[in-house]
Length: 107
Image (cartoon, rainbow, N blue to C red; front, side, top):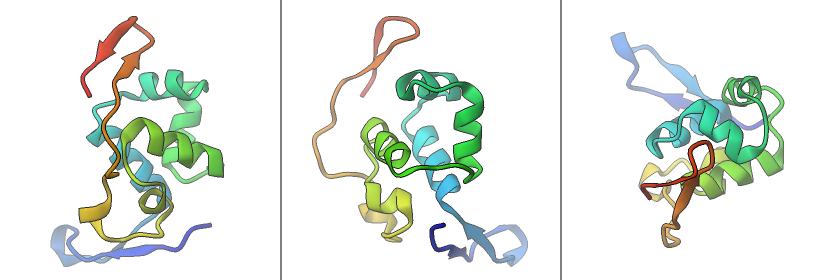
């Protein structure tokens, strides 16, 4: 299991934890990808995406796939890089496809 990061700015000044599943969800949402679309991109069912984003059963290749489809760095998704300024990958943005509809998605 990945190390946990302390999140100091929760409502009411409470401290919490930010695990790999939280990072996967944040990356997917920031990239504008719905759960069903991410499931199609990864070739899994919707329930699997929910499990991954709850930090259950996440494998190395799953994190790599999230990194590829969301343009977030693998290291940040794994929890190895806490610097959010560097969270987004510096590689060029590629065109994504929305396989459910056969249309190009905005990059």
